[in-house]
Structures are given as C-alpha cells and as structure tokens.
Image 1 (spheres, rainbow, N blue to C red):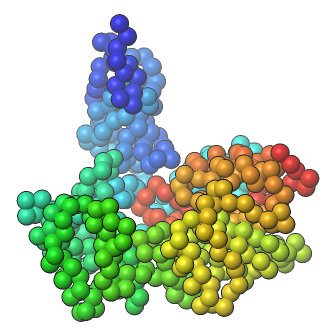
Image 2 (cartoon, rainbow, N blue to C red):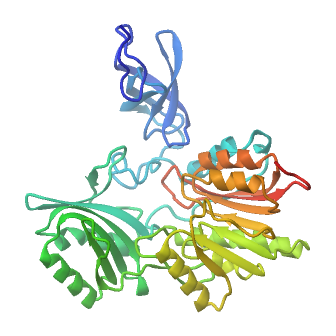
Image 3 (cartoon, rainbow, N blue to C red):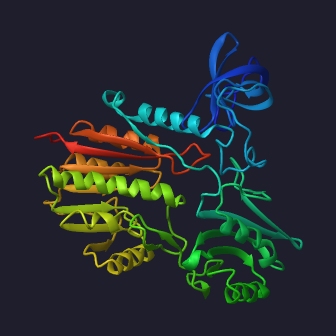
Length: 447
C-alpha cells in the first residue's frame, strides 16, 4: 500500500523521519524571503528553506524532510552571518509584514537585485541594473492593513501573522508612519463593545489625517459610530467607511478619501480602500523614472503619439505620462479608482481618456506605440501574449513581483529587447521589490 502524502509534501515512509534536528549554514535567500541551506539527509544533499535567516547564519533547526523542498524552523542561532542586524521590532519573527527586518538595508538591496536578475530571460541576466536603495527603513509606510477581533469583551488589534490568516498582537509597528501608528493604537477603544472581527485599512487623508476603510463580520457596537464621529469632529480622524457583513453600501463618517503626494509634488486623490503605493518618497522616484523613459523616446525623435496605460489605478503614473505623450488612454477595472484618476487629471488640466475595463482583456488602438503596465503581483501573462503579437513598439513594465515579471518577459523576449532595468526599494524590511523594465520592439519582430 502506497503511503498517503502529507499535505504539500511527498509520501511519508517509515524509513524517513518526520522531523530531524540538524545544524546548517544558510547559503542564500530565496525569492520568497526564506534562507536556503543545504544538508545531508540519508546520504542525499537537500535544500532546506529556513524563515527569518540570513546568508552566513549557522543555525540549529528542526527540519521536515518529507516536504520538497524541505522546510525547517530555527531552534537556535549558533553564529550570525555578516548581513544580520538586530531587528527594530521585537515582533518581526511573528508578524508577516517585515520578513527581512533582520537583514541590513544594503543586503536587502543586493539580494533583491540578484533575485530580479535570476528571474530575467537568460540572455538578459548580465545587463546592468540601476538600483534605487531605500533612504530609510522605518516609519515610512503610508498605508496598512490591520486585523481587529472582538471576543468575550476583549478587543485584539493585530497585524497579519506570518504564514497564517490570524492576527498577531503588535504593541508598536516600527515601519508605519507615526500618524497611522497612532490611529492603529486607537482601534481597540474604538471597537470596544463590538462582536466579531474585521479588517481595517489605514491611509492618510486630507491634511495628513488618518482615514479608515473597515470591513466587519459580526456586530459593531452602536457606540463605535459615535466614537468615529467624535474622532472626526476633534480632528483625530479624517473619515471612515464601514461595511458590515455583505452590505454593498458603507456607513460613512467624515471624508474617508485617501490622499498622497503625487510625483509632481501635488496632492493625489486615491480610491477609498483601493491600491496605493505605501512608500511615497520611493514612489516619486519610480514615477519620475518612468516619465523620463517616455520623455527620452520623444527627445530621440521617436515621439509617442498614442499610448495606453494598463492597471492605471488612480493615476499615479498618469499625471506624468499625460505630459509626455500626445494621446493617453488609462485602463482600470475599479470604478472608484477611475473616478479618482479623472479628478487628478482634471485638477492638473491634463487631457487623457479613462476607461473602466479589465486591463487584462481591454483592447488598444492599432496605432498605439507605447504600453505602460503596472499589474498586481500575479503579473500580466495575457497582456504579454497580446503585446508579443502586436505592433506596439515600446513597453514599460512596472512589477512588484520578480517571478511573475520574469514569466511575462520570457513571452516578450523573442520580439522585444530591454533598454533599461531598474529596481526600487519600495518596501524596506521585506523580500518584495519594485522593478521597472523598458522594452523596445525588435525591428520587424513578430511572434
């Protein structure tokens, strides 16, 4: 009888122990953030993934060899590697937000660059990568997602625990903007008397006052709404939206609209509860870089007439791109983000057309010569396939995941060549990095 496989692993065997305690030296970091060590298990050299470790760390770990790759948990740090630093947050080993807080910022930048290189098509891996390191690693986040749980009269406010869907109680978030950290700590008294649990998205609103977008399962206390109104009246809160259960319309208090400083140094309206870059300073650097890439096409005599921006959001890049091309079309699936994009363009007297549609399937005019895309972490495989079969001469791909970027670039590589590759440390203390790749179509290239 064949042994039943363990979940996520390989069939168990009476000859393979379920767990082993071994000493190991971490050789590198995997794209997902874990350290990778190599150990001998039953005369086989096996890779073991170890969370919260750094290259050069010597650790004693308990390892589950029945999984492939093997996974382990550190029991003891025997010797620290050269890139290890003391985490600024005592919750970093449990909270899922900052999986690289034990690494120096320099090591984070170098490792991100290596991960991006390794994900590129093989012939592109020796090309230069322009790196934009983080200026600061703490108190930079202008957005956060917080979990609130009310049970038996207690209110727990936590961040998302690593590798689970449960909240971990954090007394201080070291990477949050101080205004949002103060708002986060106000959530427990705010929800006192409620029942159930909810997710609270925090952002900065008008006048840099915090705003909230709440999705609650259960029964919020009636006093909760009175407290929200009082916080708005006293200026501690800009506004809040509260969705209860399956309700499609929220209860709204004050003005819950998030704002950020745009790359043109003017206020940029965002969609309530929607996507927005959490690092304003690095976002400006990235947006200016994208605009400069497009501007260089015009200055070289290859001016862009028609351009399309896919996954345009609230117009974060659009407010610069609209100044560089003669005709810009924005494609975004969120109605609230489209409304915000139109408002941001109008406030700047910029002309562009905003289309509410799925960017993955939306068509573009045959005369389009530039496509800029900034997809979610899942990437844009369908868009890459359409671009490969198109006549679009230039592509600027903004990515927040190196692996899906590499997958999509492999589709484009037969007909496009890279003109520049740059990384941006948008998320210090984490294994995530933002990447911008500029592509030019090979003359006459068709799939």
